[in-house]
Structure formats: structure tokens, C-alpha cells
Length: 218
Image (cartoon, rainbow, N blue to C red; front, top):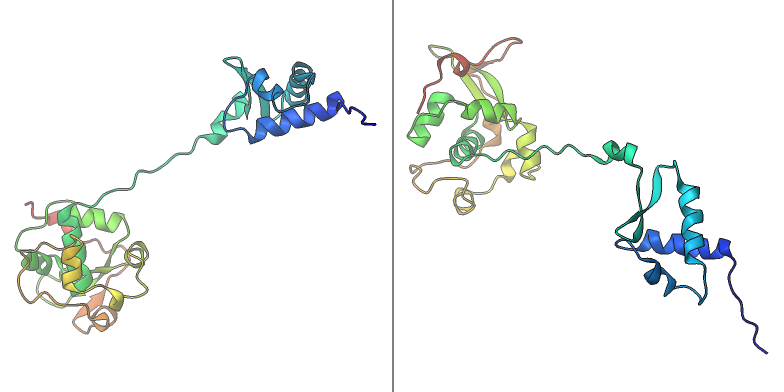
């Protein structure tokens, strides 16, 4: 002899709750009912759940004759994420960054010599602001020009453990990081140059780079 078992309202409420949490979108009463025993009081379960969740962080609401759980309206601001759009580097900025990486420590004049053109205003500003480049020192030559080197952010961004992990020139060109027209003699990195150097003095606190005052446009 088989006994029919009809879940009570509390059990139906649990099942409706589970269905709504697992659903990819809102469910209608008919869609819920198809997953429950015949004769289940879906309307009663929905009403009970709506009352139980009223005033909670998550509430049961009816939208277009379908039911779903959603964040309480007054807490919507918690779900708003401010995203900062990644800043894309121009071709000139990428070339400048590559030259600094491969020739560091290097002055602005030396960068321009390798590129064959003047650095457009703002290129070094952007690289410094993004943390890819740092002020390294002042060359012991007339005018005491500032020298530039890569910062830790450069290694982190490009997934490099150290400077000697930089790819070869051919790989840089293939990746579009170097212009194919760069002059011959472009060097591969020598990390020891970035670590030492007897021809410059360290940047002192408050020492400002000269490009902020006398940047050459181009």
C-alpha cells in the first residue's frame, strides 16, 4: 500500500526558495509549480517568502508576472562598482617606454636621439603618472639632465621578474612595442646599468624633472 505524501506549506516554501535562488532569471508561478508536487500552494509559499524577506538585504519581488530575489532597493548603491578604465599607451609612449627599459638610465635627449624625433608633450608625464617610469638621478654633465628608469610597476604590468627577462628586440618589434624603423644598434638590456652608475647623482626630495618646465613639443 502506497501512501501519498504532500509536503506541508513550510516544505513547499523551502522548495520555492531554493528554486528562485538557483534560477538564472525570474520564474512564473506556472514554472515553479511544474517543479513541485501536484496541488502545491505556490501562491501561499510566495506570499510567505515575500513577508519573511521584507526589509532584509535581499527581497522577493514580482516583476512582469514573474518572481525573483533581488537586492533591496535602498541598498543598490552597494552593488555599484566604480571601474577605472585602463589607460592605453600611444605608440609613441610605448616606444619611449621601451627605449627607457633598454637604455636606462637615460635622459630625455638620449630618448629623442634613439627615436629620431622629439618627445611629444605629456609622454613622460603619463609614464610617470602610471608608475611605469621613475626619476632615477641627474647626469653629471652640463645642464644636469634628469635620467629615467623603469619602476617596479613596469615589471609587474608586463609580468617580468627582472629586467634581464625583457624580450629581445625582434620580439619587441613583433609585439608592436618598437617601430620597425628604429635605428641600428638598439641595445638589449643590461640590468647592471640600471643598478649602478658613477656618472649621475640620485634625485633629491623635492627635485623636479626639467621636462615640466622646458618640454620640447613635437
